[in-house]
Structures are given as structure tokens and as C-alpha cells.
Image 1 (cartoon, rainbow, N blue to C red):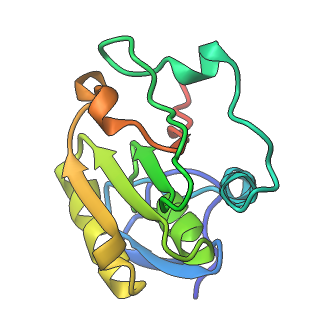
Image 2: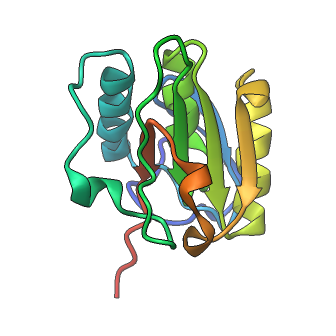
Length: 158
């Protein structure tokens, strides 16, 4: 694999290693940043029981209708992860690869990103545990609640 740039859009489609899995990042979709692996590791720790409780009420308010997007899972239920602005799906796939049985929903408003995330989920052998949807953050509701919400939007210089 080629070394990936620290930020930005790839000039051509490239495959990079992120959080232990290979993800293909097409032109027009941002590269996952190496620093984003800390977010993946925090989610893994939380879902594995080593991260304590979810944050306070401010951390729970994110949906377009003002309802909590973080839920408390019942005993025996498999964890669910919501990845907002998924891009290539790298963050969600990194978490799911490390947490057996966990499922995820990846949302993005970019058609190219949605297609890339779906392809990467299948390539990683996680296609049956991921639902990739073309949606905007404003369209999320309480029905989209998850145990962990990932969101790591790109840095846009200017």
C-alpha cells in the first residue's frame, strides 16, 4: 500500500490500511486520518465494557428532532454503532471488525461515499453487519439511536 496523505481527497482511487482493515477510498471521498484511529479505539473500549458510561445529556443530543441518538442496550443485545458522515466506512468497519456481533449503520449524504462504504463493508467481510444509507444528519431520529455514535467530519481548510 502507498503511504496515505495526512488529510485530503485522493487524486485517484487508493486502498489504505486503517484500524487493521483495508479500505478503498475513491476520488471525491476523504482519506481516514491516522488520528481517527483513537476514536475507533475509544469506541471499541466502550463497547467491550472498558469505557464506562456514555457521556452526559449534551453528548446524547444530536438528532435533527432533538432526541437522543445514544441508547442503553438491554442485557444480551448486540451493540449497534451509528457512523455519521461515514465516507469510506473506515471508522465503522474498524469498530465492527474488533467487536464480534456488533452491527452498524453508516450514513452519508454523498452518493460516492455511500457506494464506497458499501463496497468496503463487503470486502472486509462485514457486509451482513452494516446498513449503509444515503441520508443527511438532519434526517436522523430516535429510531436511529445506537450504543455508540461515530462522527469525524473532514478538516476543510480555508
